[in-house]
Length: 245
Image 1 (cartoon, one colour):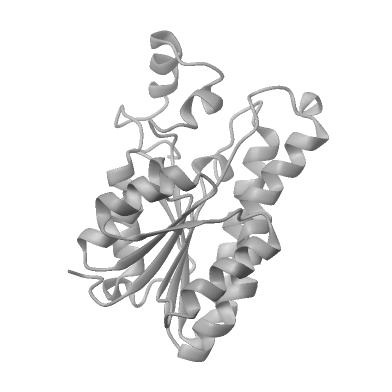
Image 2 (cartoon, rainbow, N blue to C red):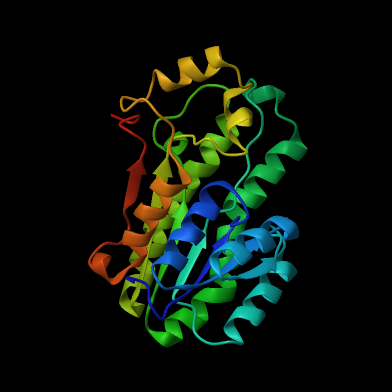
């Protein structure tokens, strides 16, 4: 019960890593708001873990503002997890359309700005809280043909460190997780297909020999957002089976 009595939001909590983080938080005693653009998915996960579902488009200011009013109207927010993310399909950088580029940067980068804008003032006023950004090994050791996705996750790493430095005096900690690809709905997009041969090739670059799982992410997130990590801020924790070594 490391998170007993705490309130958390997990964006993109309706599937994949977000669902794993939400489940772990709930198991450790937190009240979890499962926020997702897919209302059915958010409702399903929330029902499974005893949390609450919120429908939100993290790339839209009005939608994030409405989420903040709902959550903060109930009390303080202790943990904010910026997990929602998307990618473009693997292709040469010049072949990515402007629409694809804009969507990746809106969901992966602008969303962090928007949640900070609407939640940080209240968290600073409370003098406590943990923010966790879900980055990627792509922002540390990028692969070809995912150029603008890689760049968005590099942005996430820099944003995390900057936020950590600025918010530390106010009592807030900010960290990030950098998973290797997981067996989640985005896996096929990352790999450019999903066959045994493609999986084998991808896994050959991970020393531990498997993908990151939602449970891996939940365990790491729980530590970073718990009081056990009270001296940890500005860290980009690689949850990648050695991929970035």
